[in-house]
Image (tube, rainbow, N blue to C red; front, side):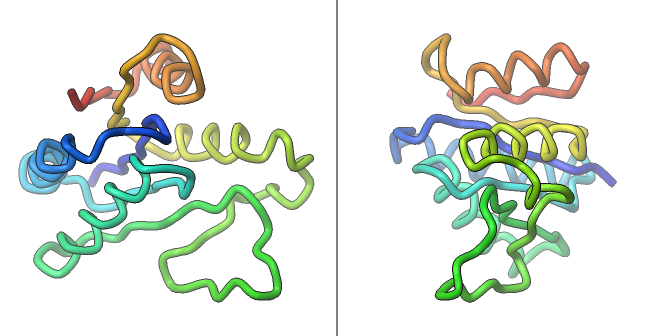
Length: 139
């Protein structure tokens, strides 16, 4: 069984969604991917979650939205929302970075959409490569 996480730009164009879906199906059918960790900050994360919600109706997969911040009183968590261990002690300005590192350490495979060589998505793609994770770049 393989665990997958995702890093992509907040402004990822919606045109990549069909390619993303095909990559997810390939991971499930051919790489034995069964657990998926996603963030919740931007277009890429929204597309990933939408596709995993749809694919979970057909495939026996589990996906989790890993929150970077402690939920407010008005937030209604569902069975797909989790907090990384220790996030409650992290200053707010470092929370997304902490969450992303947590997801990276838990994963075997990293799916990225990186269109420029700066920013968080690019940095975490570099970290994944240095950590010898399998990196799948969506173009």
